[in-house]
Image (cartoon, rainbow, N blue to C red):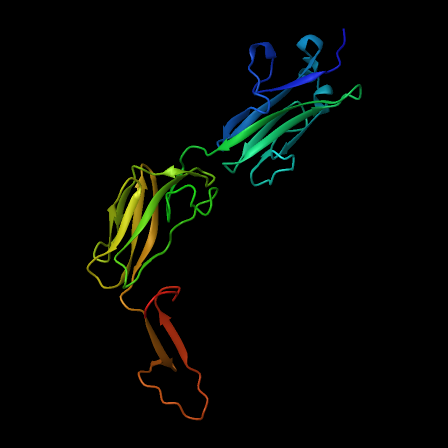
Length: 276
C-alpha cells in the first residue's frame, strides 16, 4: 500500500479528518475576524482519500510542511494585515489585524518523492467585536479616510460664521478596524454655556454654539462602557496681537531702524476661507 501523499486538506483541528469538516477550498472564500488566532492543521491523503496520520503524529515527518500567506494575486501580504504564528509543521495559526482584506494561506508538503502537494484556503477578514468608540467626521464606511485605524475628529472648531457642526460616534474593534455607527450612543457637553451637543439621527451628535461668544469645552460620546472625547473651540473673532518686548502695541510707527516684531495669532489652525 502506497504511503505517498497525493492530496491535502486544511482543518481547524487535529485528529481523524473523517469526523471533521475541512476549510473550503478556493474559489470559495471563508470568513475570519481580527479576534484571536485561527488554527490551521494540514492533513495529507493518499489514494482512495486515505488519511496518512503519521504526517501529523510523527515528529520528523510533520516538519516537512511549509506555509505561505499571500493576497489573491499570489504576492506576499503586508505583515500589518496579518501573519502566520506557528512553526513549520503540519500545524499553524493565522492572526489577522486588518479587516476588509482577503488572504490566501497555502500549506505545501514535499517528501522528495513524486510531485509536492499543497492545499490552500482563502479568507476574507472581518472586524472583531466592538472594543472602542471614536468620534469621527463621517459615519459612511465609503467616506472614512481609514477603515483600519481610528480617525478622531479632534479638535472641532466652530467659527463665528458657523452655528453647528455634526460629529459621529463610530464603533471600532480592538485593532482599530471600522465596525459601524454606534446607534445607541449618548452625548454630553462638559460646559453647556460654551457648546451644546444634541443627539441627531442614529449615531450623530450636532455640536452647536451656546451662550458664551467664545471658549473651549469637551464633548463626550458614550456607548455602554466605551467613551470618547473631543475638544470643541468656539470662536467669535480671530485676532492678531502685536508685541514689542512683551508689551502690547496698539500703534506702529515705522522708522529707518530695524525692529523685530512678533505677531501672535489667536484663532483657528487655518485661515482658509475664514474671515478675520
